[in-house]
Length: 311
Image 1 (cartoon, rainbow, N blue to C red):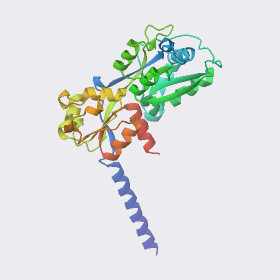
Image 2: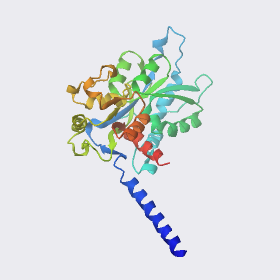
Image 3: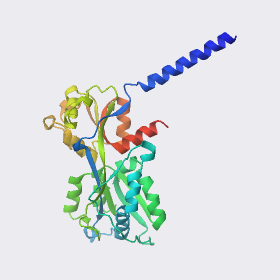
Image 4: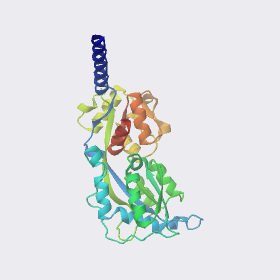
């Protein structure tokens, strides 16, 4: 009886070890395959909405609340929070401080009944990475504000502000931000020199199955990596949502492929392997994971996704 029991225990141990080995060597595991390219820097800006664009409407913009939040994001103490976010959990920074950012030393006014509620329209990247959930309680508890966060791709986040549904935006697509400001929707907060308050950055990463069928890890540059995906027609999940990530991704493809930000005009020649999801970053990472596909992600959201997978 003891021999049989011992044999059963040994077999169980072998099965468990085999399962662990299989999980650890899973060729479809979603991993970072390419990073640290100059073309992959991902800069974030906060922009206060200009109430003058809505002077002839019943839209009310909370300028005092927007100013308070932008000033708070530019305090040295807040910058320290941003810089340290994720280090304990991941062993590395998820966001970096913009070196030439304006750092203020101002007294943040406490919220009043009229200024308490702040509408922030932001990109999914800072939400899916957990940064907003981490930062906002510090701001709200210290000054009494309530930040109502609407998260979407940068294009949608900006459009929401244009409709008067935000007091400020926090996004990461310079071309779209410049257009927003040039159209008169942005305003300069007192103490700053420009409407775009660029204060932090992180990096995009090319993520895909560990097996790496397109061999992107061997590429000389990120654009060569994207060319390898196209040449092998390996499945790629695109945000397809006019977000900052989508805008960056489109810029990395060989222009002869005809891939543009207009998802309704994608060439038939790419539709077999190029999937325009029209979804946020977290959803696209999940799709890539399920379909053994490549995807461009900001590193912070990818690391958060991987951590949550293990729960």
